[in-house]
Image 1 (cartoon, rainbow, N blue to C red):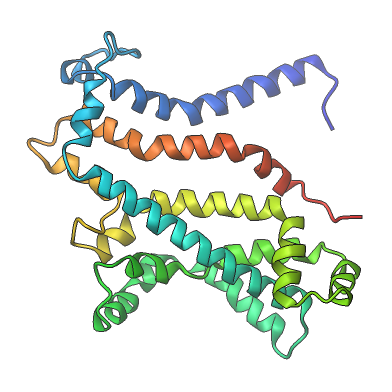
Image 2 (cartoon, helix red, strand yellow; image 1 turned 90 degrees about the horizontal axis):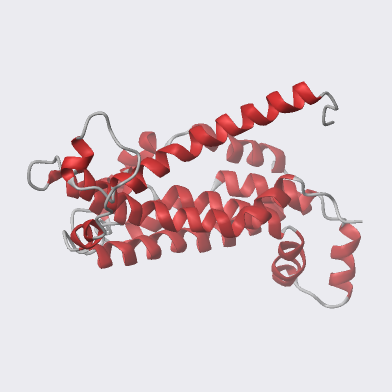
Length: 275
């Protein structure tokens, strides 16, 4: 409940504004640094605004490597992972939510337990397996290890639990099969949750540096974060204005994605059972 005390309300607004500033300022600093020249970057005390702005930094960063290829690879890997995660996640969530079978709760507990296992722990056996079957330096090496998502299964299962079984029974009476019930009835109902998880998945894998670094050595399949990291290795490594311009190639698509999807994120966290 919102406080009616003006002092408390003012403190709350000030606190939230400070948190927002702390979250936004790093992105503002990246953007302004990307438009400075090297002298402006090294200037002390630093200036907040680039005067004049050097837009050529973006062209120089883009031409420092095969960035169009990195960008395409990022899109293929990120959205390939998302499509498979949503497909398998919806099927698994339906099984855990609406089906009854021996060991269901134990299996779901094991799925949730996977959330506690970071990818850095399991990458060695996965790397060895992919190397033995010749999938290193391929899109498969970037996509298949993330084909299933414990977080996605958990979130979608919780959303599916809120759907009244009478709706599903009515669909079955009308002749809908299992896949139609899941993807044409249930998924549209829990659309906010699907979109919220999709955003989490896209942001994580779009910015992922560790896994592509381990699984690829060929520039033809390397992703955007690796391309940006390589900018620092060129020359003296002190071209921070060029490096920040490269970082903007990674940051801007995700900011735009957040702006488009923010309404659905709010709905996902306030999702209520249909009446």
